[in-house]
Length: 348
Image (cartoon, rainbow, N blue to C red):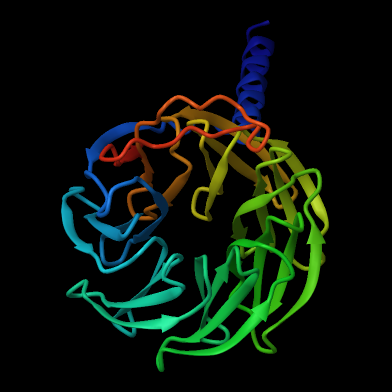
């Protein structure tokens, strides 16, 4: 009887262990710091992408006509990059000692020195120059220009435009696989456009249904999986990066913007304007499971990730109530209040 009880106990522990492996525990993310960063130059309030340079321990926060730069460890303000009109994304290339900032209203890409944070030049692009990515295969920079419906290809060494690619609709956020392909969400066409970075052409287009208006993207490069997130319908889709097949789709909250995948933990983080971080675990290359939803603050839809500390950096502000609907604008959005810009840091 005792031997049988012991055997049953051991089997129970084994089963519990199997369940634990198949269903990861909650991430434990919580707010560890909130930092107010003041008003943007020229009034108004606008914020966009967050870029973490983990090796240099810097965090770049797009903020209207400037970029705020924080220390990634003590969260102090390192400096400010000014002289812009309305910036969106920041890309750093340490080997060149340069950084690049997309300036949408300036229809340009600003080049800055990584040490001094001073702008050293500007490269003419297109109106609404928005997201930016570096392709290691071609050693070129690609910006995706929403209202202009094109992409600007830039030689970062010469700081010159190589080509402008017609994207056939309003492009949003891209990822590069490092092997000669860039995948870009096309919000207008409800698909992913695949760019050949050697021929500099769009070689394929893959629908993202059941998601719609895709804006955020990330990639598991080892397993060749793309994660695309949309605003209407509100879905995360996991796609095969070789043929565009939708493998899995999962619901998310409203106003998504950022998606980040950490290959070390196999966690996928998605932030939304509704004030939530959805955290999914990649159980296998064919299955995602939502581990936890972390409540943040309304408007905190852009996000950066530090692979050293696993901290998440999000930006937001205070918002006015939504105005009354009109015929021209049946679904008006709440507007941020000038001078209330802040960064939220979440850790474990």
